[in-house]
Length: 227
Image (cartoon, rainbow, N blue to C red; front, side):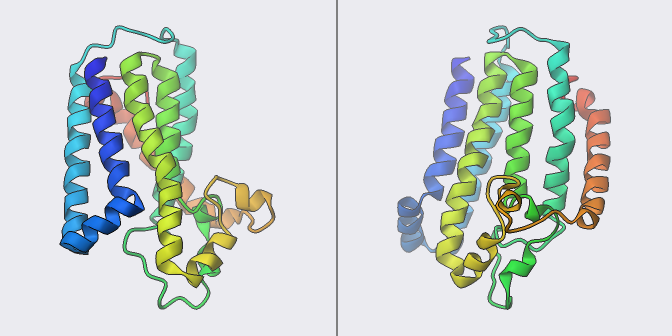
């Protein structure tokens, strides 16, 4: 368990540290934007590979709660939702995407369509939902640490991204953030947006197809029946 804890800490700390304003600004000033993005990608990829390698290598005999087939349904129910958000997030123009500019957008509030009506961070929340579902379904300490690291990074990443985009996109971000929310359904609950079911048909179909494919191949690839 200690090995996966160390690997998870390396993954989380290195990932979030390089994303914080003081460190990122100092490194960009020192080496430039392009090299910084290269460094960030290299560190993130290396630490992620290391974490996955440790996770697949260490034994999982210590449990916080014992395996229960009834809990497998948590991931089976939440994974389709996660994949609809994940796939749907790539079907719309989203200011939270890396390198996205609003210079040619007259009214950024009009970009809030499809799954971004639910959350302006569909990818990050897909990871959070995936992580929580797999924590509940597994129950062993190694899996809890592994999946929780993704929940922490993606959950914290939504707030760090909001701060970064507010500084870089200015008025366009103000327009967009006014009609969207970080927390899923919050903008809808406060009356600043609404669900348009017709916009969710294609993301739902694509997400469910993706779930079917993952479900079919999951055990062969990971050795686990939990998805």
